[in-house]
Image (cartoon, rainbow, N blue to C red):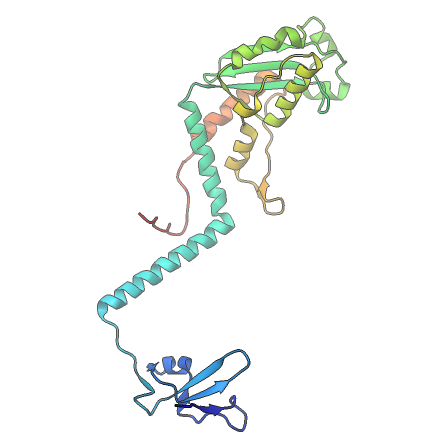
Length: 283
């Protein structure tokens, strides 16, 4: 049958008090059956139900105890997920990244397929290597040597690492040290700021017409893992802030400092410190 049409509340043809919307029925503990009237709007129709007519609405059925238990359990699960998502979005991802860095360090100490490499150079751009060192996974030195560049070492660079032209005057040249690839063969190479050292190594190879050492695909940037472990996140840059190695700015000393950092990371807790319950994973 055709429904009686009404205007919005406050207008001349507003619904009588005994006609209620679905939301109002719910507040009265009633469930809708058949509408008795309607308010038509541009976007949707608001159906109205007669609380005095048992064919228009009826009392809500009381849930069984088991249904109440299930409802409460589902609400709790939803709250746990909501709280966890909020925690993870704000700080939880930092905690998870830290634990991943710890697990990475622990894994390194159980393997023997890696070395640590460090270089000292004449500068930052188009620079040449003046010292190189490589140690193995036990901290033993595989290589530690000065390298004589074909350009002078700038005083401002000497002020950082302390290496002078006089110290490298009788040192081997890069081509003479180049077979260092033997110490790196079939090994993963851990480097603090690997992008810089690999760039310098490749530049020196090109400068002396030597084959590139191809370290990019088998290197790991320890600086990035340490930054992740420290967890100093920049919400502006959406990345972790890098932290200094705090070595002695000499190739071997920095290798050993990097090695100590790996051991320090591995000694940290590998459990996520989460202040809210963690949602159960679906089996």
